[in-house]
Image (cartoon, rainbow, N blue to C red; front, top):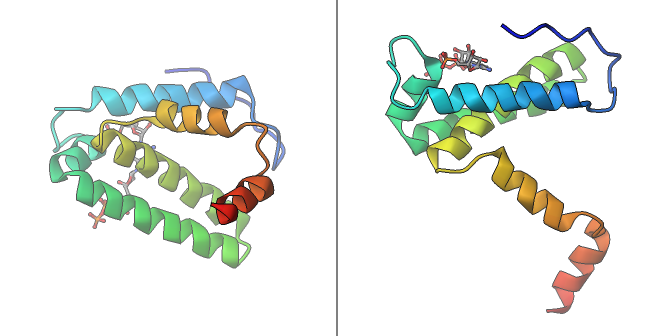
Length: 123
Ligand SMILES: N=c1c2ncn([C@@H]3O[C@H](COP(=O)(O)OP(=O)(O)OP(=O)(O)O)[C@@H](O)[C@H]3O)c2ncn1[C@@H]1O[C@H](COP(=O)(O)O)[C@@H](O)[C@H]1O
């Protein structure tokens, strides 16, 4: 078991220790491929297929949206964790990972969203 990171103030900048948690979760999700669905929630989702994985992500994302809408920050943290985990499972069910998403974000770095949208309208 990794050592737990000390609590950080709300809204703190994302640190390497936070990214390490994501990397460990990624490894855990990968390790559940072909595991026993009776003992693993991830394996159960994989066994049900990509459509179920997508549905679960949608449900958890909506729950996060509701928490944000009513300004319940504790619930927002919990639901966002559920949504992030289920996003990663959904990506894995289609042979992708957050590394693929990171490459997309990397390609967009330095490109203003406003300028990009304006360039789309011209074409
Ligand atoms: N981060 C998570 C995580 N977040 C949420 N969940 C589970 O997601 C489920 C969501 O519950 P719901 O009632 O919404 O869904 P459900 O039980 O499928 O019910 P239905 O929608 O099917 O009716 C709960 O069982 C949560 O425990 C998670 N399950 C696992 N992980 C991580 O994945 C690792 C591997 O887990 P297993 O695959 O279970 O070994 C764990 O060590 C954790 O690090």
